[in-house]
Image 1 (cartoon, rainbow, N blue to C red):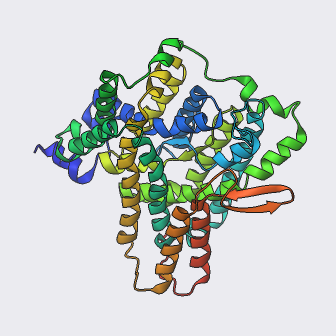
Image 2: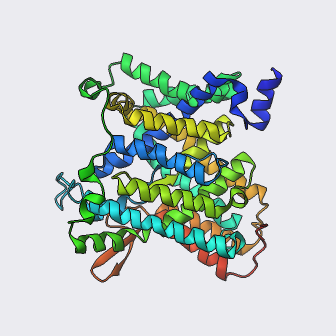
Length: 443
């Protein structure tokens, strides 16, 4: 093994430029591919535009990096947490389950999501004024560790569902990722995802399991922003009561996504070996995430969020240079202006995404376990066992739907919470009230 390969394997890559420009570009493309499946799934489930989504995933990521001083290797993709909000304001099916058009209602939902992003900014300001320690005392490893584990496990069902569409293609993707990562040398070792994606995609095409009709029909160049689908289209002459309803319905969801954000930043910190909550600071990461969500939503794209898949890629490839993420964001922006390229990637077999995701989601949960181990959480203490147990059971056990397994009324409106939101809130509250705290955040 060469000296450079040994460094890559043991310490990770913190300066990707040392690998050379072609390899850095390839790494960026790989990271974009890893984020692509989940990123475009949200617009497919809500009726939002895929190209717009890609554009603001890329721009949102670049904005996040600007605000966080380019220090945090995080990619911002479409948030699944707001799916219930979109379904409540702009449903794609009627009560009988028949497909309906929701284009005229989507701008109202987007405005509600944009307002939810304001809560990030409020919390970022409070952290800046009062200090990170006062906030992080509610998020010790006994809370963030199980939340990170739950993020991976709750995503796992979608990976299995995708794999079940074609297990042969999925298994090929999984095997290629594992073989390249374990036995690969040099560059092969740190680009296993793109090898897995391309290998399984090509196999599916050879076996005639890919429909390229959408690619043939798509234009080479197109504008990714449609003004009639932006939130601006309803702010001037829209239904005021509908705007208020969207805000009240969707805004509380941000409480859950903020908790997920803290969990993701903790996971990235644990993976990379740097405390990003201290430097550049949680207030900056929240500000970046919140502003990215506001901008994306106003222009008709889904809410942005720090991605669990991102942590999985970092853990698998050991490439920690934020430059790679910015290159991935650049590719997302570039592809947003080419409907044909976006369609080509969109034709990627569902099983290919499922196979790659299966590995990445498992890596997320493994990072959560490592977070607990490295913090030396004492599970001889009953309080810690109870907190971890309830976070995991509630997060995984509660199945989220538009109706909401856990819901409460505000007037005539129903506010629904995902299992992850309920589990996180339960863990935060229990950690705050149960005696025997043994962790102090070092600011």
